[in-house]
Length: 73
Image 1 (cartoon, rainbow, N blue to C red):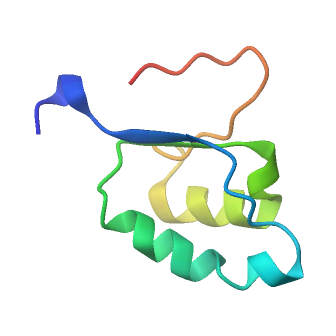
Image 2 (cartoon, rainbow, N blue to C red):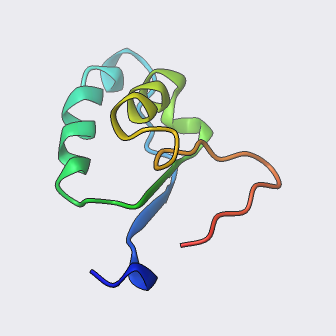
C-alpha cells in the first residue's frame, strides 16, 4: 500500500461496561486483519479497551483522542 493512503480509524467503539468489555479481545483481534496505520479511540471506547489497543498495536499506532490533538492520515 502506498504510504500516502495508509488506513486508519477514529472514533468511539463503545466497549465499556460489563456486557461490552467481554468482546474487547475479539474486537482487537479482528482489527488486526485491517493492518491499520492509526487507531484513534474516543472516550466512549472505555479505558480497558483503550489500554488493550495500545498494548496490542503500540503507542505509535493506537493514540487515544484528546481535545486539541491533531491526527494526520
